[in-house]
Amino acid sequence: MSATHVALEHRFRIEHDERGSLLRRLVAGFELPEPDEGVGDVSTYRLVGDEPEATAWCDEIEIVRGPLRDVASRLLTRINVAAIRSVDDRLVGHAAVVEVDGGALVLMGNPGAGKSTLVAALAQRGFAYASDEAAPLGADGSILPYAKPIVVGRGSFGELAGAGAADIGEVGAESTPEEAAFWFLDAEALGAAVVRRPLPLRFLVVPRYDPGSVAELEPMTRAEAVAAFASNSFNLARHGRAGLEMLRDVSGGVRAAELTHGSATAAVDVLGQWARS
Image (cartoon, rainbow, N blue to C red; front, side, top):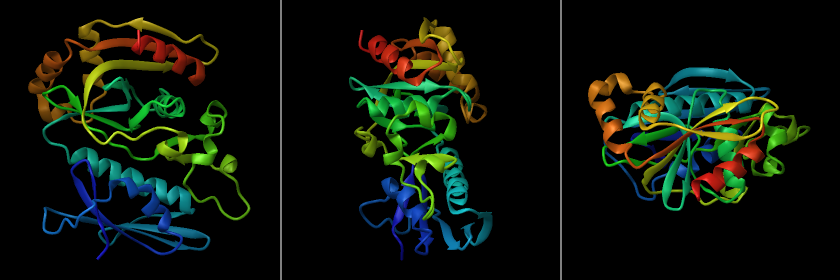
């Protein structure tokens, strides 16, 4: 029997052949140290390479086939969705998260806002990594870590000097990481510790990428911070008014700002100075 993994509250096992071992590396951080038999439903994901394609299944239902890296990405997305849906008692924000002085700095926003690029650049600067996908917020004001591999697209490669060495994907005998469409980045290989414990929410930043602009932070009010988290939550509809009241209650000591930037490097400098001032 293969090992059991847990991503947030989603339990699963993986099966693979030699080429499909990419999936094992992508979810290695979720493996439980001890057997976890008989605890709720356990999904089974399978990734098998079949030149020139790979094929992925979930519980014996075929999901997708195609180039190995693309198939692995789609399967990781499937695991992400299941992990996020598994959380019942927390409001899950669409966000990237790093640790700053014992607290969570949450980068909140929709796809295309540059969250993953920023969190990878922060990891390169030594900020401990917690997530590039989800920020599950509890009534006690804590954020659970969800330390999956950081996924960044080709458009970010130039911003992340040297990060290709931290890519754990497979690109083929005649390819290099620089030729891939995206990277699966290992935070520890980038030079960051990985957070394994809940962090108190201390900072909330809403990034907006604007090519050519200077990195600037504009303070947000408490009400604006609550609205930002609510509007970028995966499961607010499940919590309704109780979720909004929870956000109101835990946001009192949170520093919040909008970040406009045209460069991840400049943005990281501004964020570090602001969070530690």
